[in-house]
Length: 444
Image (cartoon, rainbow, N blue to C red; front, side, top):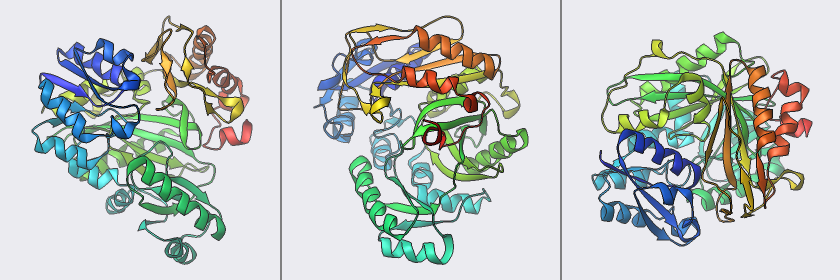
């Protein structure tokens, strides 16, 4: 491929453009009217405005994106994460226009991007998972299955998308009827698909995910695991790799299960298999993300691999040039999502202009960001300012390095999550690796 259009915005668009430049591939940025001053627009070889600020009029408008690709002569599209990255219709339209979709084949998205279908695939391949259902349309239908097979509490989950949208816990019949309707409405608004399914709720688990890579020749490997347990409202805030407090035997079993699942559908891109791990270190398949993830950075730090470059090469028909035996993990990496949010107001968004912006640096510190001084954090999209990633020889040293980097960060003009991250890093239980998806709820 010679020219890639990046159908995304913000830090991930910048990340992809940088990888393309190092591969000698030309880039096309697309942007909404609200993003005309964004860094990804400035550093791409070409840029095309694709619509107004609301994402439904720009980053989710397939016809505008395809038109931009055809006008600029782009022969490939990278969807990044979010927006259209797991939209099977978008992948199919790319394929029908002879545009390479830098992600898995549309069939893979159908099989695994839909979370209810993915459960069926997991069962076939003997990957452990909690009791659950396929797509359920009415609360009455869900209640019958819960009473007969699953039992409360349950998690109501959208079959499409991610980022915690379309997810609700129901601990009784009243919550089921209220929260199922709410989840369906949120899923329809966020993904254009109201479908939900039900699964048994695992109380107080760790959220651990396996990064996988597959090529078009049947080769699949995993790059170790990440612990993403520090989250609020199912949205991740701090991630680390490798998972500190999971036994080696369990980590190996999860890696093998992830590869087995990906191989069963001939998966041919970067992807992530997500698991819940309970207090007794039993693990359960949760879902697969058929795209690059925000936190791919920490896996890159402990493996020395560039996952975006590998993803592009796979899409271009290259074989994986590494085997499972070649994957060696070293050290420990932590990522903090620096968001324009006010933790004291339940993480309410804090859009505005960055009147002062000084990023940290030094050995073992990485910043993935589209922000700069006088840049405006828009109210139309997610509130991420930057991803701050650190790497060191072990977890204890990585925590110390992250604290140093957070203390160096200077951001004025908006509220941020910097002080919150520092508070988490000082927490005794966090230092001991005693974390779960309820960590914030129980400790903050």
